[in-house]
Image (cartoon, rainbow, N blue to C red; front, side, top):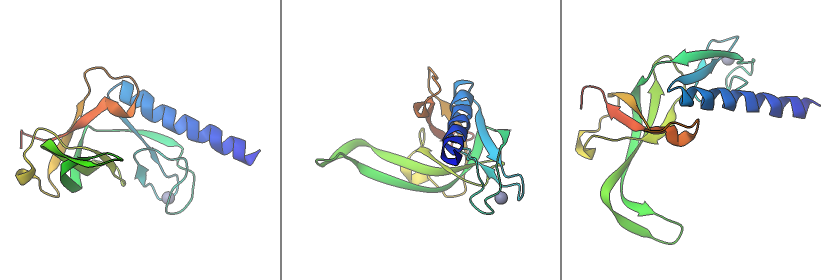
Length: 142
Ligand SMILES: [Zn+2]
C-alpha cells in the first residue's frame, strides 16, 4: 500500500513539472521542513527526508554551475567529430537549491564561464516533454 502511494505521488510530481514546461514555466517543490527547493521537483527532501509537497513557480533565469564541452557526438558504436562543439551545463535556476542538466546554446565554448547568468530558451512547440527546454543561453547575448 505504501508503495502504491509513493508511486502515485511521484507521478503527480513529474506531471506538475511537465505541465509547467507546457506552460513555459519551471515548477519546483519545496521541503516543508528545511525549505530547500527542488527542480526537478521531488516528493521528499534529499537532505532531511521531510515531505516536499509544496509546489513553487520558479523564474526562467539561473546560473551556470558547471559545464562540459565535447567535440564528439558519442553513440553506442563510435564517437564522431561533431560539426559544432556540444555544450552541456548544470544550471541552477534562481530560487532553486538543485540543478538541472541542459544544453547550452547561442554562445561559443570559449566564452563559457562557471557562474555566468543564463536564461532558458523554450522549444518552438512545447508539449510537456523534457525536449521543451531547447537549451539555456547567456543573459544579454553573452
Ligand atoms: Zn528538507
